[in-house]
Image 1 (cartoon, helix red, strand yellow):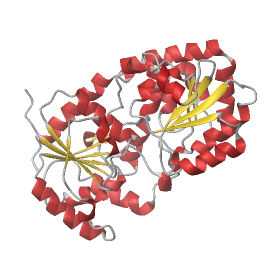
Image 2 (cartoon, rainbow, N blue to C red; image 1 turned 90 degrees about the vertical axis):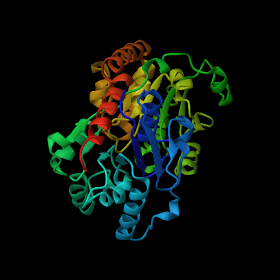
Image 3 (cartoon, one colour; image 1 turned 120 degrees about the vertical axis):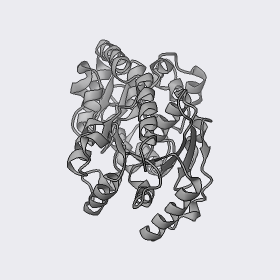
Amino acid sequence: MAKALRILHVFPSFELGGSQRRMTTYLNASKTPHTHLVHAMDDCYDASSLSDHFRTAGIPEKAIPKNSLLSAVKTCRKLLRQINPDLLVTYNWGSIEWVLSNRMPKRCPMIQIQDGFGEDERSQERPKRQKMRRVAYRACDQVIVPSKQLETLARESWGIRDKRLMYIPNGIEVDLFSGAPDNNLLEQYGITPDHRIVGTVARLNPEKNIGRLIEAFSAIENKHTDARLVIVGDGVGMSALKMLAERICEPERVIFTGTLDTPEKIVPAFDVFALSSDTEQMPISVLEAMAASKPVASTDVGDIKDMVANENRSLIAGNEAASLASSLDKLLSDTELAHTIGAANKMAVKARFSLSKMVESYDRVFAEVARKPK
């Protein structure tokens, strides 16, 4: 049996996002005896509802200074000494204080997991952050990325050597999305069997650009009068997006469900899964749609074109509402094509992105890195 480790995970936020969903899915599936502690730097623990296989680290949000990086690093170092984990796992730019705190000398082995970038770096890295990533991430025992694009960036922009760089693609429990949708849930939102659904699952943050999806849907809704746009998720953009939908779409054609802890109850009801982001790497929501045998219409960002089946790749195109509308129209106009692509996506996700492969990879790297000397 594997040695029991104390692993401290530091997230900028433990909101219901992709990296949080991936890690809670891993915690639910892993059979290792480790103790997992989670600290959310903004004190948001919404993703706690997804797993009971961890506990919070007990660090108040106000314990870490906000206005001084040096003071924050010093505080994180004191906290790291108090918690004394066997392994520190940090996530994305928002946890940089913790990465910097575990240096000269290093208190424990350290892994940085980089999932992507926020709205302020959607086009390119900010120069100061790039320099700091080069300094901080090269001190990590391992840098893990879920996409090939990030793997190239980590090597070329941050100078991470191959022996310290690991690509672990996201994995999901494919069978979870193979069932029927929850009809009672659909009824709550006025969705009937007569409706065809263009659906998405996303945080309603600027980088997801749901406004682009609403604009694309407005361009094709008069041709497909039985179609509904279903947006699953919540975030800072909710009010503005509702106003946009009311202004440019027909009444009651765009449905906002808010956050759902169980997307497997609604994704199987989609006829088309749509993604309209400005920046992505390897979105779990796309894998879940593929597992539910859905075709994907998306902007061409991150690894999405490589993730989907060959039959689906022509529908991952551009970054404009017009190209997304064209893909949606093609799939809604040809039901047989949509079903064929959906079936191919199901085969692709089962072959390449299973949960068991991801869990095995994380189990192994956590144990290997924790054994390294400080």
